[in-house]
Length: 284
Ligand SMILES: C[S@@+](CC[C@H](N)C(=O)[O-])C[C@H]1O[C@@H](n2cnc3c(N)ncnc32)[C@H](O)[C@@H]1O
Image (cartoon, rainbow, N blue to C red; front, top):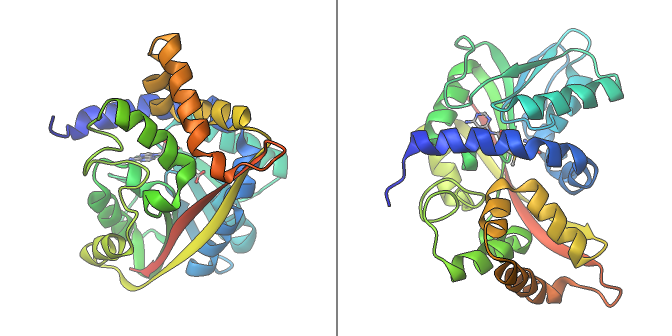
């Protein structure tokens, strides 16, 4: 089946709106796992006091809020996402932290509704690989950056380096090869998980001074059951692909994922599953 970008965009929006409640529920562990990635992105773009920053596909806006502290009080940050539900979570988090100088906007990163050369910095953590057309989104990113402005982005590295998502995806794919999201050449968590591909996309969009670093993480869980519930809660596509099956098959999938994560399971039942992210910085 060939990839239908418009059908994908529609299901991406619905899926992320539905997933936003789970993301809000689990924001604390996710913040901890990805803190180093956000810091590496900030280091890559080095925001300056007074600058205007745009965060794309921001989810709960954690990286944008870090930037807000640096550019304040004169500068400002726009935290944006396609999904209202995510932005509601980001607004609540900003209020909780008392972060000032932040605006929230529903924006699609593939057609950013902002003028040419209107921002100094763009941040995007775990966004571009999930978009129907990452090349279009990067061209848009460069368009809204002023000449010399900087983009800092994070994408998952190759599937082999990310068993926390690679194992559940492999167990499902073995039962029933799936096309579309996550499969083949279409968008999915690992679609940009190659430094070569990432650099080529950034170069094609006209970026210069491209630097790519790798950030390792360990995703810790009290138990496999906690990992399983969290994975179902955070990924709408995994949730639907698993829970739409008969009970017996759901149990088989559950047990197969647990068995493959055994190498990352300690004797007390806790898990520490590795992950690796590519963090790129580039100049417009
Ligand atoms: C994996 S989450 C990452 C959220 C956040 N950046 C983080 O690192 O925690 C992906 C986010 O990208 C957003 N997204 C996906 N495609 C998008 C698009 N074309 N334009 C804007 N947001 C998009 C989703 O709504 C979702 O909030």
